[in-house]
Image (cartoon, rainbow, N blue to C red; front, side, top):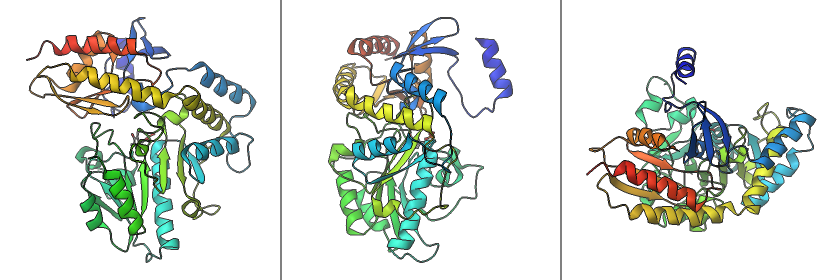
Length: 399
Ligand SMILES: *Cc1c(COP(=O)(O)O)cnc(C)c1O
């Protein structure tokens, strides 16, 4: 195991600090390392593996399609993309979808759509469009996207950044109201901030944001790359407040845990700002991605994963609240999207994750203090109990 880690460290860029475990196989909620030790995956690859590792139906969709036709580019139609886009629009109740690969690309797509909509539909003066984002957001890693970040490390050394972004506190509708000008094209937010440490806005926030955006002819765009597709106990996290944004961004779990698949979905008047040549992606919407994405959307519904996430998430939260240890500072989340904030005077979240690893549980810290519990949504109550027992044992040494 150490030799592999050393080789990766020697030849790979050091832009991650992984836990020292080398995985070689996955099945359902389980992962195995090269020494044959089994782990319960409580991370789910940052919510990309909601269906579990190597789901047989998704692997079949991928391999069947790969044998038939894999990549066409969008220079031609394929017989797979239409069905995928239709299913995604029907599930989310949006008119149109634009396929990309990574989440960051779909966010960039949403930003481009919002700006062009601002110029063509709202008559914002040339190059004056503004997009409002929230403090502590995470929308990906491109130059434009880290330019809207407030996280020092994400930005430092990577400037200059494109202009046209304004940043307001998350959870503060009054700040949104005050930030809007006639040049505001869109407000982009995460319904629950994932990378910020599973941060939930106050109740009613999304509803107020939707009202403010509607009153001011500003697009409300929700980044549901991490929160979407059942993660928080609803198909889309904004459905907890019964709002309907003007556009939504999906990624991560959309690829069925097998490959990168992302979508920007929006109302027709927003998506129709794009004309041929405006925007594109060589691999976006390729037949393999479309086949896997479609199967993933079908599985989400047929396996009732959003409902399962709601039920099991409530159980997990309830059990965590009974822990009664001074080592836990806060517990937050919805569905199987839970952050356990560790009291920093006892341990860092990474130290807790390293100890959980020796107990056969894999998770990863977000920032220094939060342990993320976001397992594949196919997890069982018994497997959650195993995790709870390990966490209880690890935390019992503190306080
Ligand atoms: C992961 C994530 C992204 C970026 O997705 P990539 O596929 O890593 O580019 C964007 N927004 C949110 C909310 C995310 O969690």
